Image 1 (cartoon, one colour):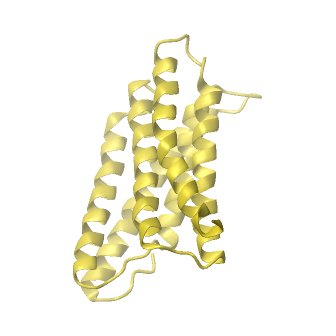
Image 2: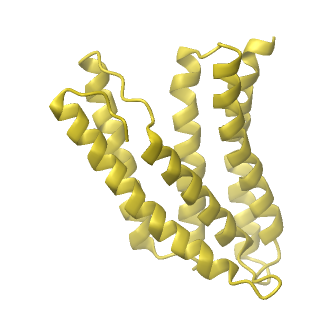
Length: 186
C-alpha cells in the first residue's frame, strides 16, 4: 500500500484541477477577491503534493512508469488551468500564458523524440527552479489581494515573467543537450 502513495498524491493533484477551476469560475462571478484564499489554498496543496510525491517515490524506491507518466502531466494540467483562468480573471496577460505553454509543448515534444531514441531527459535544476518560481507566482496571483501592505499581485506577475525566462533558458538547454547527444543537466 505504501508504494502507491506517490501515485495517489499525483492523482489527487490531477483531481484538484476541476476544483480549482470551479473556485475560479465562482471568483469570476462574485465580487473581486471573494474566493482568492480558497483558490490559493487548493493550488498550494497541489504544489506541495508535487514536491512530496517525487521525494517520497525516490525515498521509498517506488518510482514507477505510471508515476513518470502522470506526474508531469498532472503538473502541466494544473499549471496551465490556473494560468488560463488567471487570464480570464484579468490577472495575467494572455501572451505570457502562450509563451509558457509553447515552452511546455516544445520540451514535451523533445522528450517524446528522445524516448524514441532511447534517451531519457529528466527534469534538471533549471526546470525545477522554473517550477518553483512559477508555482509561487501562480499562488500569489490566485491570492491576488495585497495583504499587510505587500504587493501580492505585482510580485506574482514578476515571478510569472521570471519563470517564463527560466523556462525558455532551461528548455533551450534541453534541446542543446539532446542534439549534442549529452544527458540534459539543466
